[in-house]
Image 1 (cartoon, rainbow, N blue to C red):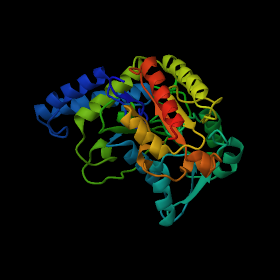
Image 2: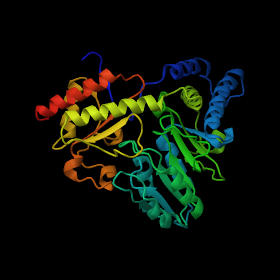
Image 3: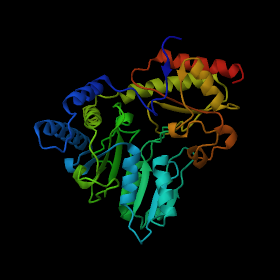
Image 4: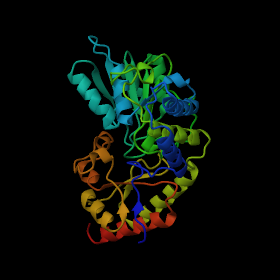
Length: 377
């Protein structure tokens, strides 16, 4: 089959060569501590601040509203902890299809008595039911909604969610890790008070994410120690990873990182071939707005663990859903919230690709999957 076919971009995608070049240059030029006052330290600090300006420019905020973290998970945890008020146990609302980086800290905060965690229901496509969100948002300290679901690719109705949160006076936390750059929208005018972007989902190397705030909602520190990141995140910054994140955001702002329309055309061709090749296959969220390079499929009578192992041997890398849940045979919380039963969920696969993926590779992957199904996998 030639080179391995990598269809797990939602877990991690290869760095864009332009971003990787920025990363490498920053490794050479920004190795010093950016908090140091000498020339080498100032050079490193300049790289961090340039990246801060690039993230801010993409999202329409001042540079001081950007806090760099080590990962999207850390940034989401910081946002959630910042929303708590000790002794008051305010309500914190999250959609039922949030990433575990939101759901797990919310459960912990609830167990500690710091918040009352409430899940907002979703419809059969995995979108927040806005009418049912409204009463939950009233009086809430925070509402968390993922912009695009990592497992299914389904895009949330953020405009409607934002109207509900604005009417309720509830700050809106948006996990834009999967959506930024892939969903064509103006994030400077999108509804959000806190927004998280992760470098390694944005074709940058791992090691940096950003928590961005506006509307008077400022995050407090989760990691304490030194005064880095304007006192909002202690610890010496990873200069190279931050510089790469900034470069990726600049490419998104200029519309040069990805071509969502081209990716969507490939996805639609992929799904048409898949549904023709495998009778009874079901595309999750078909008919609603989804990420342009993500196909989640349910295969009747399938066993995702066996299929993934067989696909890997055939030179195709795919997944059953979120990478942090790999190896689990149970139905994911996302599919459960959507009303997918255990039998259908057992045959779940996620195929996610990028701009370097060719149609020939996608077609070959479908053919390999269809052959495995005929063999009883």
